[in-house]
Length: 205
Image 1 (tube, rainbow, N blue to C red):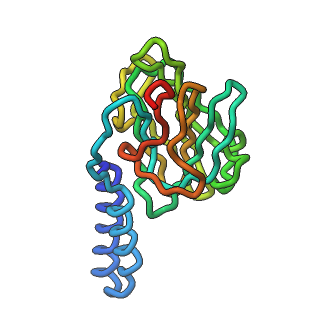
Image 2: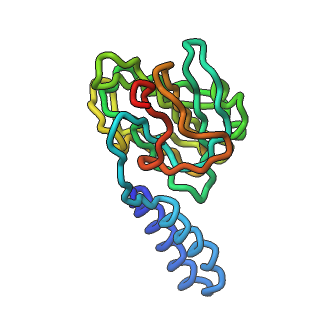
Image 3: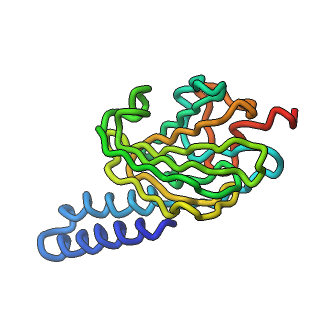
């Protein structure tokens, strides 16, 4: 579990206890439900990371958009509802060479325009293989999500499948892939962060 879940769960749990003691137990039920939901929301399950020349999913959720990019690659958009695991993971092994935070709107994250309009944090990862182009992973806030958390900074190394952050309470994660990657997913498919293969290197067909 992410430590944030302990803080939220403990806070709502203590509030429920206080309300139950001061007023009556039924009044504490909503707070107790919130405490339980926070413990569930901030879960952090173990994932088996696939070996080989593949890029793994940076998030749990459903693929809502796949768009071509000007460089001949693809942008894969993954929508996370409030019941999904909200941990973000690195799709490949490499080093973070750029981090860009943009303030923006909080429109519904499944909409295509959310990639450019919503509050977001983009990390560019330079692969360990010097022959590959950098990948970009973008954490995008949604209608309910109001806080983007990132544990990494420019210069930090990352392993494939390593946790690098999370988005609280509903969101979206975009993965920008270069032309050397062949997609292994389709729109509407459900993926799991760190374990689902999003793309494979063309040379590895």
